[in-house]
Image 1 (cartoon, rainbow, N blue to C red):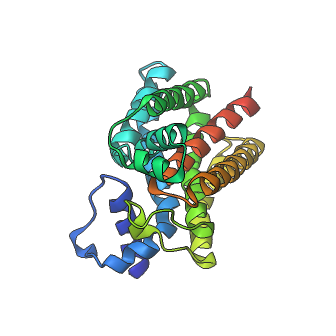
Image 2 (image 1 turned 90 degrees about the horizontal axis):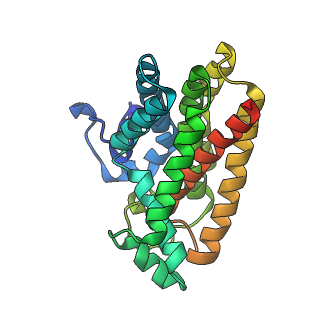
Length: 254
């Protein structure tokens, strides 16, 4: 029952989806809810994939991808996209650690953030629209949980860079068993996609490898520039890892 409550707390924290009233809330639950971050991604990915599939029945692939992407952004309240834009602004315009953190707290979006979010969404939608329908469904269901696992790896291995912040309640360092639970949440989508033949296992392996490389590169940058991760940094890692997966799957498919 505690694990179920932790999942619902993570779902409430990272999405707009309602949770049952019986779940309740205890502040310390947030410290352990990050283990279900990838499972929340699986829920979001499955909904986005279902909307894509339904739209693709009657609309061109590009339009179906745009509707699916819009649905995913609505479900999460643009939580990760906002983090990506703020990180672009902070790392692009902040010459010192203090200035970068200050910029990232500003709710206004700057040139780096605007350009970054537009290019990121363009690459994401373009890559997905060029995949066959079943491959797109599989890619969405796999990339969402795996990219959130990459973000969770920063909580597992890095320190939080701020004294306070929107990710502070979940910034308690993950233990090895908690990260193992997070990783296990990604397995069902991978097994289902390969068993059904919707996505080649080599494409999944290449995409996952690209996710790991992107995460390692960006974690190093965050450590150098900020001394650790922030909530915005987690969003940026999630978005970059997700895009890396789609692009590599498309390259393998092509």
